[in-house]
Length: 226
Image (tube, rainbow, N blue to C red; front, side, top):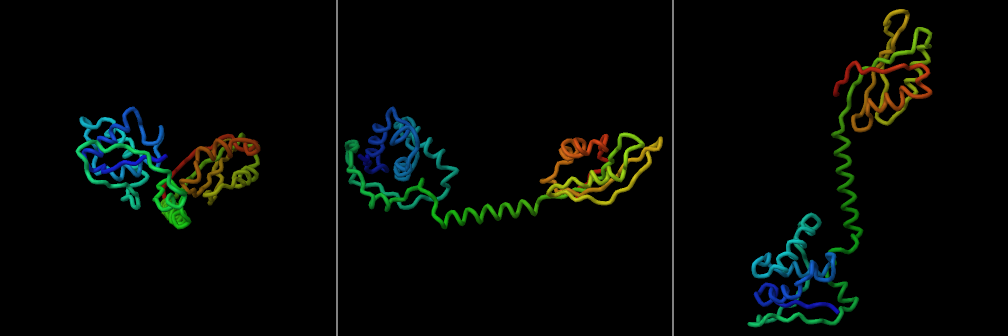
Protein backbone atom coordinates (compact mmCIF):
# COMPACT_ATOMS: atom_id res chain seq x y z
CA UNK A 1 0.00 0.00 0.00
CA UNK A 2 1.28 3.47 -0.88
CA UNK A 3 1.71 6.10 1.82
CA UNK A 4 -0.05 9.47 1.40
CA UNK A 5 1.23 12.73 2.88
CA UNK A 6 -0.85 15.92 2.96
CA UNK A 7 0.09 19.59 3.08
CA UNK A 8 3.83 19.19 3.48
CA UNK A 9 4.18 22.96 3.17
CA UNK A 10 2.40 23.37 6.50
CA UNK A 11 3.41 22.74 10.11
CA UNK A 12 0.85 19.96 10.36
CA UNK A 13 2.20 18.25 7.28
CA UNK A 14 5.79 18.44 8.54
CA UNK A 15 4.72 16.98 11.88
CA UNK A 16 3.15 14.10 9.99
CA UNK A 17 6.37 13.57 7.98
CA UNK A 18 8.51 13.79 11.12
CA UNK A 19 6.40 11.14 12.86
CA UNK A 20 6.61 8.84 9.84
CA UNK A 21 10.37 9.20 9.40
CA UNK A 22 11.20 8.60 13.07
CA UNK A 23 13.72 5.75 13.06
CA UNK A 24 13.83 5.66 9.25
CA UNK A 25 16.42 6.83 6.70
CA UNK A 26 14.16 6.94 3.64
CA UNK A 27 10.44 6.81 2.89
CA UNK A 28 10.26 3.25 1.56
CA UNK A 29 13.24 1.35 2.95
CA UNK A 30 16.96 1.76 3.39
CA UNK A 31 17.65 3.16 -0.09
CA UNK A 32 16.44 6.24 -1.94
CA UNK A 33 13.45 5.62 -4.25
CA UNK A 34 11.09 7.70 -6.34
CA UNK A 35 8.86 7.95 -3.25
CA UNK A 36 11.57 10.07 -1.61
CA UNK A 37 11.80 12.23 -4.72
CA UNK A 38 8.04 12.87 -4.74
CA UNK A 39 7.94 13.85 -1.09
CA UNK A 40 11.15 15.90 -1.38
CA UNK A 41 9.58 17.93 -4.19
CA UNK A 42 6.57 18.73 -2.00
CA UNK A 43 8.65 20.03 0.91
CA UNK A 44 9.34 23.69 0.11
CA UNK A 45 12.36 24.16 2.37
CA UNK A 46 14.60 22.07 4.58
CA UNK A 47 12.67 21.28 7.79
CA UNK A 48 14.05 22.76 11.00
CA UNK A 49 16.56 20.42 12.63
CA UNK A 50 15.30 21.52 16.05
CA UNK A 51 11.60 20.98 15.37
CA UNK A 52 11.80 18.09 12.90
CA UNK A 53 15.16 16.29 13.35
CA UNK A 54 14.21 13.12 11.45
CA UNK A 55 12.66 15.02 8.54
CA UNK A 56 15.63 17.41 8.42
CA UNK A 57 18.15 14.55 8.25
CA UNK A 58 16.09 12.78 5.56
CA UNK A 59 15.90 16.03 3.53
CA UNK A 60 19.69 16.43 3.61
CA UNK A 61 20.23 12.78 2.53
CA UNK A 62 17.87 13.10 -0.44
CA UNK A 63 19.27 16.49 -1.43
CA UNK A 64 22.82 15.14 -1.51
CA UNK A 65 21.76 12.15 -3.62
CA UNK A 66 19.91 14.29 -6.15
CA UNK A 67 22.28 17.25 -6.33
CA UNK A 68 24.59 15.82 -8.99
CA UNK A 69 22.06 13.73 -10.94
CA UNK A 70 19.09 16.07 -11.06
CA UNK A 71 20.23 19.72 -11.01
CA UNK A 72 17.13 20.88 -12.86
CA UNK A 73 13.61 21.55 -11.65
CA UNK A 74 11.41 18.47 -11.16
CA UNK A 75 8.17 18.26 -13.16
CA UNK A 76 5.04 16.13 -12.91
CA UNK A 77 5.31 15.00 -9.28
CA UNK A 78 1.89 14.60 -7.72
CA UNK A 79 1.36 15.30 -4.00
CA UNK A 80 -2.13 15.52 -2.53
CA UNK A 81 -3.11 18.81 -0.89
CA UNK A 82 -5.81 18.97 1.74
CA UNK A 83 -7.09 21.82 3.90
CA UNK A 84 -4.76 22.61 6.82
CA UNK A 85 -5.75 21.20 10.17
CA UNK A 86 -4.85 22.28 13.69
CA UNK A 87 -3.93 18.71 14.44
CA UNK A 88 -1.04 16.89 12.80
CA UNK A 89 -2.21 15.51 9.49
CA UNK A 90 -2.35 11.73 9.81
CA UNK A 91 -0.36 9.42 7.58
CA UNK A 92 -2.87 7.21 5.77
CA UNK A 93 -2.49 4.15 3.63
CA UNK A 94 -3.76 4.76 0.10
CA UNK A 95 -4.72 2.03 -2.39
CA UNK A 96 -1.92 0.97 -4.68
CA UNK A 97 -1.90 2.91 -7.92
CA UNK A 98 -2.81 1.08 -11.06
CA UNK A 99 -0.23 0.56 -13.79
CA UNK A 100 -1.89 3.25 -15.90
CA UNK A 101 -1.72 5.80 -13.07
CA UNK A 102 1.88 4.86 -12.38
CA UNK A 103 2.80 5.59 -15.96
CA UNK A 104 1.43 9.11 -15.64
CA UNK A 105 3.82 9.95 -12.80
CA UNK A 106 7.29 11.18 -13.56
CA UNK A 107 9.69 8.35 -12.71
CA UNK A 108 13.05 10.01 -12.17
CA UNK A 109 14.77 6.64 -11.99
CA UNK A 110 13.29 5.15 -15.14
CA UNK A 111 15.39 4.09 -18.13
CA UNK A 112 16.47 6.84 -20.49
CA UNK A 113 14.32 7.51 -23.52
CA UNK A 114 15.78 7.16 -27.00
CA UNK A 115 15.94 10.96 -27.29
CA UNK A 116 17.84 11.23 -24.00
CA UNK A 117 20.25 8.48 -25.01
CA UNK A 118 20.88 10.18 -28.36
CA UNK A 119 21.51 13.52 -26.67
CA UNK A 120 23.91 11.89 -24.20
CA UNK A 121 25.80 10.17 -27.03
CA UNK A 122 26.11 13.47 -28.91
CA UNK A 123 27.50 15.16 -25.78
CA UNK A 124 30.03 12.35 -25.30
CA UNK A 125 31.10 12.55 -28.93
CA UNK A 126 31.52 16.32 -28.68
CA UNK A 127 33.67 15.92 -25.57
CA UNK A 128 35.78 13.22 -27.24
CA UNK A 129 36.25 15.40 -30.33
CA UNK A 130 37.32 18.34 -28.19
CA UNK A 131 39.76 16.16 -26.28
CA UNK A 132 41.30 14.88 -29.50
CA UNK A 133 41.77 18.43 -30.77
CA UNK A 134 43.45 19.42 -27.52
CA UNK A 135 45.79 16.41 -27.53
CA UNK A 136 49.31 17.70 -28.10
CA UNK A 137 52.25 16.30 -30.04
CA UNK A 138 55.95 16.15 -29.25
CA UNK A 139 59.13 15.85 -31.29
CA UNK A 140 61.67 13.47 -29.74
CA UNK A 141 65.34 12.94 -30.64
CA UNK A 142 66.67 9.61 -29.40
CA UNK A 143 70.04 7.87 -29.37
CA UNK A 144 69.97 4.10 -29.88
CA UNK A 145 73.20 2.36 -28.88
CA UNK A 146 74.38 -1.06 -30.16
CA UNK A 147 76.18 -3.74 -28.16
CA UNK A 148 79.52 -3.37 -29.93
CA UNK A 149 81.26 -2.53 -33.20
CA UNK A 150 80.13 -5.84 -34.72
CA UNK A 151 76.40 -5.00 -34.45
CA UNK A 152 74.74 -4.68 -37.87
CA UNK A 153 73.52 -1.06 -37.70
CA UNK A 154 71.31 -1.47 -40.76
CA UNK A 155 69.41 -4.29 -39.06
CA UNK A 156 69.35 -2.27 -35.83
CA UNK A 157 67.60 0.60 -37.58
CA UNK A 158 65.20 -1.76 -39.33
CA UNK A 159 64.34 -3.30 -35.95
CA UNK A 160 63.71 0.09 -34.40
CA UNK A 161 61.50 1.26 -37.26
CA UNK A 162 59.57 -2.03 -37.13
CA UNK A 163 57.91 -0.79 -33.92
CA UNK A 164 54.50 0.58 -34.89
CA UNK A 165 52.12 2.26 -32.45
CA UNK A 166 49.09 4.54 -32.83
CA UNK A 167 50.40 8.09 -32.53
CA UNK A 168 54.05 7.19 -33.34
CA UNK A 169 55.80 8.40 -36.50
CA UNK A 170 59.50 7.69 -37.14
CA UNK A 171 61.48 10.44 -38.85
CA UNK A 172 65.01 11.12 -40.11
CA UNK A 173 68.01 9.25 -38.73
CA UNK A 174 71.79 9.11 -38.99
CA UNK A 175 74.72 7.10 -37.67
CA UNK A 176 77.03 8.97 -35.31
CA UNK A 177 80.52 7.65 -34.36
CA UNK A 178 81.07 7.29 -30.59
CA UNK A 179 84.59 5.78 -30.58
CA UNK A 180 86.44 2.49 -30.96
CA UNK A 181 84.69 1.85 -34.25
CA UNK A 182 81.24 1.93 -32.59
CA UNK A 183 78.41 4.04 -33.99
CA UNK A 184 75.05 4.95 -32.50
CA UNK A 185 71.77 5.56 -34.29
CA UNK A 186 70.30 9.01 -33.74
CA UNK A 187 66.66 9.05 -34.85
CA UNK A 188 63.77 11.50 -34.76
CA UNK A 189 60.19 10.58 -33.94
CA UNK A 190 56.91 12.45 -33.55
CA UNK A 191 54.44 11.24 -30.94
CA UNK A 192 50.89 12.06 -29.87
CA UNK A 193 51.29 12.72 -26.16
CA UNK A 194 48.04 11.03 -25.08
CA UNK A 195 48.81 7.88 -27.07
CA UNK A 196 52.54 7.24 -26.74
CA UNK A 197 54.76 7.12 -23.65
CA UNK A 198 58.44 7.34 -24.56
CA UNK A 199 59.46 5.48 -21.40
CA UNK A 200 57.06 2.63 -22.19
CA UNK A 201 58.25 2.58 -25.80
CA UNK A 202 61.85 2.10 -24.68
CA UNK A 203 61.24 -0.29 -21.79
CA UNK A 204 58.61 -2.52 -23.39
CA UNK A 205 59.42 -2.41 -27.12
CA UNK A 206 62.95 -1.25 -27.98
CA UNK A 207 64.98 -3.01 -25.27
CA UNK A 208 63.21 -6.39 -25.20
CA UNK A 209 63.32 -9.42 -27.49
CA UNK A 210 63.79 -9.58 -30.39
CA UNK A 211 65.05 -5.98 -30.79
CA UNK A 212 67.50 -6.24 -27.88
CA UNK A 213 69.57 -8.53 -30.07
CA UNK A 214 70.82 -5.30 -31.65
CA UNK A 215 69.91 -2.57 -29.13
CA UNK A 216 71.84 -2.20 -25.89
CA UNK A 217 70.18 1.00 -24.64
CA UNK A 218 68.24 4.11 -25.66
CA UNK A 219 68.64 7.69 -24.45
CA UNK A 220 66.42 10.71 -25.00
CA UNK A 221 68.51 13.57 -26.39
CA UNK A 222 65.74 16.14 -26.87
CA UNK A 223 62.02 16.32 -26.14
CA UNK A 224 60.07 19.28 -27.51
CA UNK A 225 56.34 20.06 -27.61
CA UNK A 226 55.04 20.85 -31.07
